Every structure is written in structure tokens, then in C-alpha cells.
Image (cartoon, rainbow, N blue to C red; front, side, top):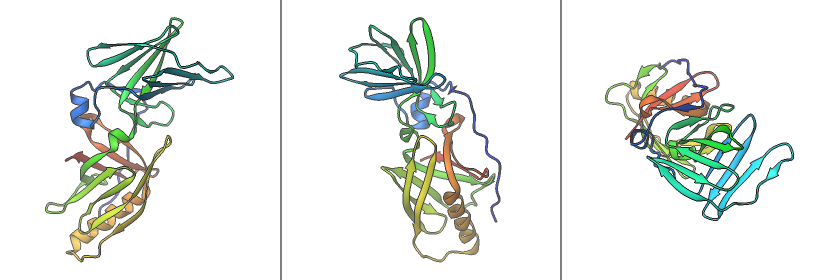
Length: 232
């Protein structure tokens, strides 16, 4: 039976994985509008779209009216400048320093000579696509057994080692959950059935995900159960 192994979730704000490596390894691309950037301590959020940049701050400071901006680039980085602040979006993987959620871009808000760090983009862009599960609980998937997952538009599908699987997933600011996982009912040799049971148990326990160096997908649970997957 495939066992469990401990997970590690980095608490750092950003991993410096530049493009084109980031695009190839994580599925992210150079930053484009529209997008949202956000940071903590103090909290701030910027909605960036063609109509302007809208900054939201806490503690009664409210929301700055959408401001027109100029757009420039610095290599693969995007720089948006208004009369009130500048927002820089760098193509480096970023982790929210409160929830640990990975984001495709690192953001820097500069206002009144103060720099505030944050993350930008949609975490779903990192998860979306086709993956091959390479290990469960620190043990490699047995040779000749295919375990695959595809995430698209709130649906997950793939192969559990024996049968095809399908279900839904929910990605929120706090984490990732999979639900309503169903499989076909084909019988397979005992090793494949054992792998399938471990896969289904792991999927049911997932509470978050991360992207490791090299673009590996980590599917994680509160207890530490982790599946590793590589892009197909």
C-alpha cells in the first residue's frame, strides 16, 4: 500500500523563477491585463484593466478611483504608472505570505516612496492543464500504471491507475478542494487497484496545492499527504 509522506509548503513571498522557464514549467505567461494584484500587512489590492487601475486599502481608507495609467515593460516585467502610484508585475512565482497560495506573478506597489510587496494573477493558471502523477506518499507510481489529472474550468478528469476518474474542484483564496470524484468500474490487477485506492484517498484529502522548483505540482492535505505531478 502506498503510504504517506510529509509536505513542505514554502512561506516565502516569491520564488525567483524567471520567464521563459516560468512559462514552460508552470504554464504561466508574461503578465497581461486585466489582472489583480494584492498584498498583506498592510492589505492592498489593485484591479488593473484597460479602463484604469483601482487601488483598495483597508481601515476606512477606501478605494482610489480608477486612474488612467501608462504601460511600459522592463524585460518580461510589466510596469503600470499612474499619478498616484506605480505597480510593477514581475514574471516570478509568488506565494501569498498569509495563505501560502501560489500566484503566477510577483507584484510591487510603489506609493509615496514606499514599496509594498504582493502577488498578482490567477492561481488557476498554475493549476490548469494536464498532469502525470509521478509519486504518492514519497513512493513512485509503479511502472506500467498511469495516473493522470487534468484541471479545466472547475472540472478534474484523468486516470486513477486503473479506471478513468472525473469530478469537480474548487479553488479559493484559502486552498484547493476536490469533490464528487467518480470512476468507471473496470477491474484491474491487484497492484493497480491498490494504487487507485491510494489515489482516490489522496484526492479526497487535498486542501491546497503548490508549484515547486522545476514546475512540479504538489497536491497537499492538512495531514501532509502529498501527490507530485509533472506537466504532460
